[in-house]
Image (cartoon, rainbow, N blue to C red; front, side, top):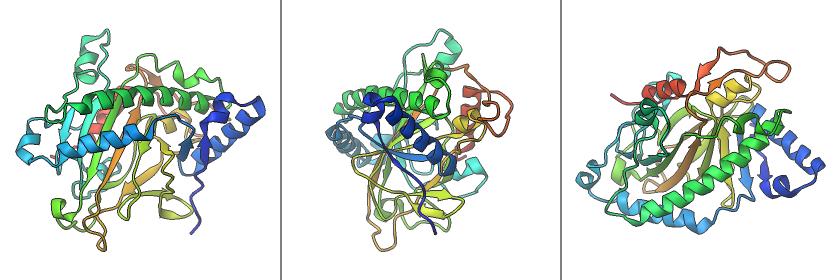
Length: 321
């Protein structure tokens, strides 16, 4: 088995370096996204203590009794609490796995859009648990940092394709985004995993770019490559794990691949292992038509799709029941 080719990209030289340095980084990004669809990103400037405080506040919510959490229950793609059994991400690729072994708090952008129908679908108000009032300010600060980082990454991706830096960012003037805090408790909470059951089943993300702050664990993230199959994802506590989703792969005409991944169930030799991930899903503005970049950059010419019609279909596909 070969190691997945997932480089670490330091954003500081990208933001401050000379043209040769920037070109070298852009080539490394292009090569990585052709193979596994993943990057590790450092030099992002996001305070690690902010991530720690979010986890502490979120854990205080997740460990509440189920009846206290139930009043915040939401559908997949909504705002609030996704309880046990709400999602099966493997459904998106046709894998009929049991429901994912996790709970989530999910928030999203709420700045109003000019179309009331779009507002109702994508810009509903967030629901903040009153039991942990500190969570709102922490998450809103984090989301500001993620929006800045996503914009920088998308500029880098435009240049990595050999196109203009605003090739993607010009479609992000009023983007939607999703933010999930995923809690992966041990078997004392979720029970013994069923055959073929994961904390998150094998899937690719649906949108443009995902920015993940994760914790290392025995039952943690795995990445799939054609060369090596399933392998544990490389981990750097200083780095964000970044991957592209299905829409970005379509946009590039399959030059870049949507990174297939899964999160393993609680390990048999460490059944009480508990992990928590902060997952930011960056998207474009509603109504963006995603058309494949033509050859020689792109390799496949997909039919153009409305970005958010596509996203809603994907979100519905992983909803259990």
